[in-house]
Image (tube, rainbow, N blue to C red; front, side, top):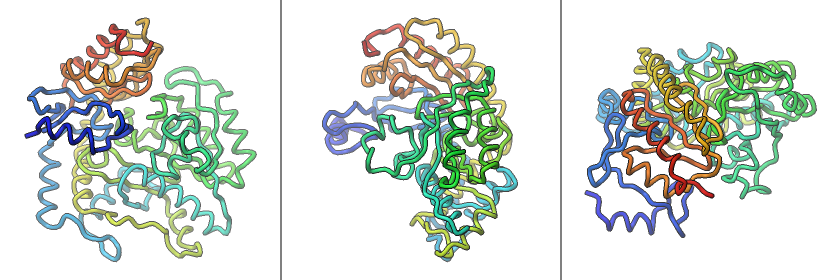
Length: 430
């Protein structure tokens, strides 16, 4: 039961992501979720186009994920990871090591995607300390996004409105021009020039390059050419700089490959995973690295890697993540994502001709309609709910990242709602 009093309390007392308590955006009360649908308190159902921020790849209330959690809960929900191990963590890490590139054999489990990025950056800096050097700078890309904690923010696009507030508080790093050559289009060798210039000039101070492979997510939903990523790997090898791949959004099939790095056939030195790791059921992340990086960290003055979250290796999260990966390893995700990609192409690409549209792009189970002006957030959210769908745009980007199990009719409802919204000028800023 969810009452109007509950909504009023929520509005007055509870912060939601990127929302003001002074003048909060409306919130819609969800009381249940099943498959690819969310149920509102008034009984209406919404087709979910967001996978709960890209995480619920198997849909909601999946019986195997529920069973994994229930079974683990009957044994223990949590136990500290310091000085203790347990079957759920070992099983999960076995799967992660088996499904990622062979060189990535050491796993650090943490709480969330942002923390995975923090861990990766600490790994890189402590690696160099283990080699007798102090390197505290990172090279990254403009228009990138890596999370909202402080180290993660420091390698997000400095012009991004989410993080420009903290300019002056954050460490200063190097930002190469964002890739301009698009996925699936012609490669222009000049696209790598600014990155090449920066790594040539500053490589002796750079602990690592950190980037989102192929898909720049919350920084703009941009898909770039695999050759750019290949050249980044080549420059890192040339100058002996570590490469961190932030696959928190792209990992586990979202881009059409199990990991987006596979589009370029490259392997990072450190890999960050999160979001879909547990199938959208619980918060968990993993940071994987090579034996060389791990052992070099152990030779630093500290003698160990200096990070240890309270809920590291949480058994409940590990157990459901292990079952989520088991579902992926059965192989259905590949055909599901291919089907979603084709339908998104068929139904979204024609919107390029709409006068309100600046661009449309599709890759894997990601569809993006970029409008010419920003959306009116409260108005367009209400409109989508009235259309029976859950789509959460930001800025000029109306995008879909549906669960892989979505039915064609459900996906058609999502794409149709976007098409109808474009015809309504009141949903966009003038």
